[in-house]
Image (tube, rainbow, N blue to C red):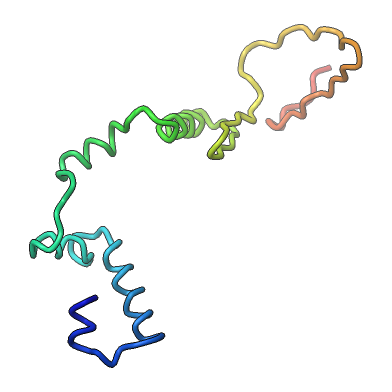
Length: 126
């Protein structure tokens, strides 16, 4: 940006803001052929904090974090075709369990039970 301002001191206001936006997008473009960051590294104007091998290893073996747990949960649900939802704070499995049905116990004091709707499209049990 400094070089652009030195070459073109007349750039101000909206034009300068548009240029900043374009530089920001180019910097965050991770493509090695079109992105700005790989060119800056090649010119010695930017230093890598980690090696490409470390990045590749992290893509396949993430650290034990909540994000990794969410990713494993999503992958497992997709694998078995389960209905689920995920937020930053919760994991929710919406599919009915695949374990055999347990006998229903009678509702306790003030407890009400509602039947869980069958989402599978199967005919109701007699």
